[in-house]
Each structure stands twice: as C-alpha cells, then as structure tokens.
Image (cartoon, rainbow, N blue to C red; front, side, top):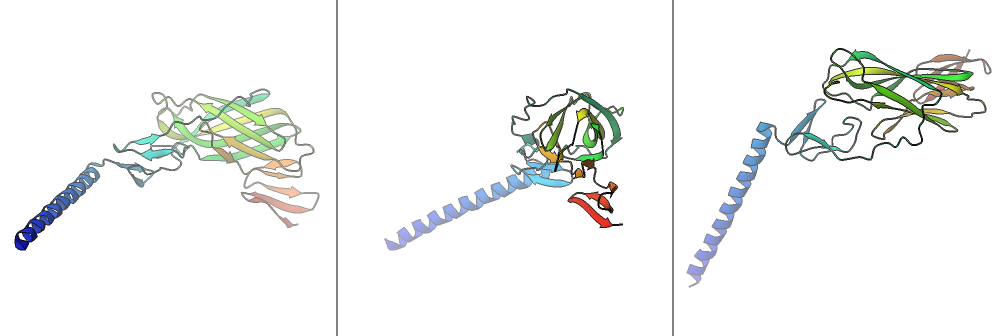
Length: 239
C-alpha cells in the first residue's frame, strides 16, 4: 500500500514539474519571439526601452512609456493654461535655423542665444528644437508672456500638424517686449514654459540692472571688474 501511494505522489510531482517546465519554456519562447520581432521594445535616440518602461523627455514630456506593440504612448496631460499670459506690447517672430539629423526633436532643448535690455525695452532670442516642413519652413507660432515682479515667463503655441511639419529642426523665437523696466530690481529671471507645462530657466544673468546671456562678457564699471555670464551665475575678476 505504501509503495503504491509513493508511486502516485511521485507521478504527481513529475506532472507538476513537466507543467512548470512547459510553462517556463512557453514564456521564454514568447519573450524571445517578441524580442526578435521587436514587439514590446521601443528605440528612442539610440536607447532601447522595454514594455512599460518610462521614456524621459520624449517630446518634452515625462509621462511617456513603451507600449506592448513597440509604440511610444503618452498619458493625457492638462497642459499649460494661458489665462495669465498676454501678447500686449509684444512683438513676436520666428524663423528656421537648420535641420537636425534625427527623427524626433527634443522639445526640452531650449537655449537663450541673445538678450538685450535697454531703457523701455527687452529683446529675447531663443533657439529650440521643433518640427519644420521638408522645405525648411518653421511651423506657424504665436508668442505670449507673463510678467512678474522678479521674473519674465515666455511661452509659445506651435503648430505640430504632422502632415505639414515632419522633419526635425532648430527654430528661432524672438520676443521684443516694449515698456519693460528693470528699475529697482535686485534680481530677475527669464524663464520659458512649453505647451506640456514644463518650465525651463534660460540662465540669463542679472547684474547692475542689466541682463546677459550665457557666455556674454561685460565690464562692471562700478567695481572695475571684467565679468562673464555663466550658467551658474556671474563670475568676475579685477581689471
């Protein structure tokens, strides 16, 4: 009797082990098949992402992931509210700079290329990645701003119609704000916020009532020093 029960238990264990091995083999086969077919794997800017992995800074967003069918999906966002922005006293223009040798632009790449302040006016020039037409035409855009006590927040709305604009490029945005004053300011920042609601510090330097872009060299007449605007602030040395 004991021998018969022992054989039955042994048989049951063999069945369980067989089922387990079969299931494991099937799973591995499924994973390898997906990998060979490229299913559940996304490639973005040379980096491979697997199914459900978050893809940072995709189109300026941080809520995008690799789906099971190898497509990059993004959760819905509320985006930016433009209620507090205005275009009053603002002259805005845009232009094509150059094409980029990559399929997808990085909408988080925003650079302050020039800033000029004079009594009663401010000019800010930005370079940012976008999608242009195949003929080198910048997408249609509208610029706006929000002015606070110690900061200027710039933004723009850009046409992303894939049937018109499909090639990665760099575009220039020029904001000219009239009736602008920096008098009695101890500090001041210039920021940009994109359509997804992500804010970027343009690293403008504020010194002695004037604004400078990164890399600008200027003379501090008051203290007789030669200064440079760097990303982490103004650096000066005695003349």
